[in-house]
Every structure is written in structure tokens, then in C-alpha cells.
Image (cartoon, rainbow, N blue to C red; front, side, top):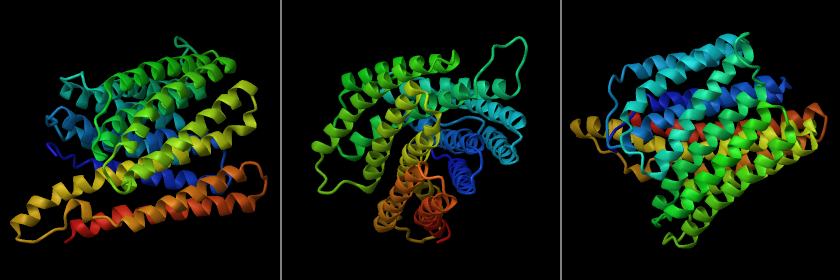
Length: 386
């Protein structure tokens, strides 16, 4: 790694805390707005910020200047989560916007080469990150001189605009690299263009509260995702690996939930059957978001921590394991299986109005998160304290 972000592990821990509280609150039957805000403006947003602090400088072979600014970004993010937990959304939105504006001002000057497809996706993701955070503020602190912003618009600006672009952009680089396959830039650019058209249509539909438009845009987004899935399929088909790395398995499962989530969202919007909102949220946030981000953390965080401790331990004359041997594959795969079962049960529980089913399904997913914590954060703590 050319640059090692020391703040990224802290953002990942904050994001994990956000997700755990969101699922626990879902188990207790909290309202969907509370769960949605913590999941989207907490878990998803904080993960993307933390990952971008590592990915963007390395993609540019450049170091961040004024690194202490990261501390202010993190503190603002942590305070945003704190006020979300208190359901003080106006204050939480202001801290969220502050963190995003500081983060943007910090990383944007690093970007000099805009040609890589990953950077194109991440630039668009950064744009939607700022828009979504601004919409979050306007949704809860309405001002007379600004237009009305529906809560749904703020949420989907982050999930579709920011998260989807960030995930596709990063996986466009990571999946072919991990599987040692050459990326087809024409297909990647086609996915970029079609996906952006679909996102604009969806967000326009939410802005004018026309759900038929949202449904139409969702189908366009799905086409963009299917184009990207060809890249994934082509990389897997032509890989020289005898067995798929477990990180790729996380990504593939996450993408499967993404397709299901988009289809459920299109049906929800087209039929205006808002009883399906919990199912859609489960598939998109806990399915696509949770499993994809878990895979990304399994791939990225060991390399960060390993690079952080390698020089120090080498100077002390201590041996540390190879970066590829830091984590245990079996623990990661058990985490994946338990999370999948949890998501399926949580999705099924949305059709059964019984507290017991909600408790049990959420408990399975929470168990998966605890296994994830042990497989990743605990193992890296052991490495750090060697």
C-alpha cells in the first residue's frame, strides 16, 4: 500500500456499531424511520467515508495532507450517530453534513487522475454523498426558501447514489484484481452510464413523489447492475483460482441480494404497496449493504492493520504472519452463512406479524455480526498486540 489510513479502522468500528444497533432496534420493533436512518446515515455512510480515506489516496498514489482533519471528520460522524441514537435527527443531520463537507474538502484535492473507471464511480458517489447529506438536513430542518425534500429522497440519494456507485466502482477494480483477470473498460463504462441514468430517474421520482417513475428508474438501475454482473461473471469464469476467495463469495451473495432488493423496490413503487418497505429495507441494507461491506472489510482492513504494525514489529525483531494468513477462512465463511440465514429469516418475518419471529430472525443476524466481529476485529486486535 502506498498510503495507510489510520482513521479507517475507527470508521469501520463506528459503522459496525451503527449496524448492530440498527438490527437490535429492528428486533425490538422500533419504527422503520429510526432503523433506516441509523442504517443509511450511520452504517452505510460511515463505512464509505472510512473506506474512501484508504482507497482514494492509494488510487492516486498520493498521501493526504493535513491528516489531523480526519479526526474532526470522525468526531463529527460519531456525534451524528450519537444524536441518531437519541432520535434527535435535526442535530444528527447537521453533524452528518459537517462530516461530509470536511471529508470532501479533505480528499478531493488528492484526486488528479480522473481516468480510471473506479475513480469515475467514486466521484459520482462523492457527489451523491454531499447531496444526500444536504437532503437529510433539509428534510428535518425545513427552510422557507428551500423546496420540500421528502425523507425517501434523502435516504435513496445515499443508498442508490452514494453506496451503489461506491460498491460497483470499487468492485470493478477489486474483483478482476483478486481473480487475476483483465477488466473490459467498455462494459464498465456502459454500466456506469446506464446506472447513472437509472439513479437520476429514481431520485426524480422520489423528488416529485411519483412512484411509477421510481419503478421505471429502478428497472434502468437493474440493467446497469446486470451489465456490471457480466464483469463479475467473466472474472469468475476465467479465473485461475481453484476455489473462489471468500471475499468474492461475500461480494457475489451481496450482489444477489442487490438484485432482489431492486426488484422488491420496483414492485413496491409500482404497486405502491408500502407494506413491503421492511422487506425492501432488509434486502438492500442488511442483505446487499451488510454482506457486501463485511466482505470489503475482510479484504481491506487486514491490509491496513498489517501495514500499520509491520514496520514497528520488524524494528522490534518480531515476526508477524503474512497478510493473507491474518484471518481464518473458516470463521469468515461461518459468518457469511449465519448472516445469509439471518437475512432470509428477517425477510420472511416481514410477512408474519409475530414478535417472536422478529426477535428470532434478528437474533440470528446479530449472531452473524458477533461472529464477524470475532473473525475480523478480534483477529486484527491480536495481530496489533503481538
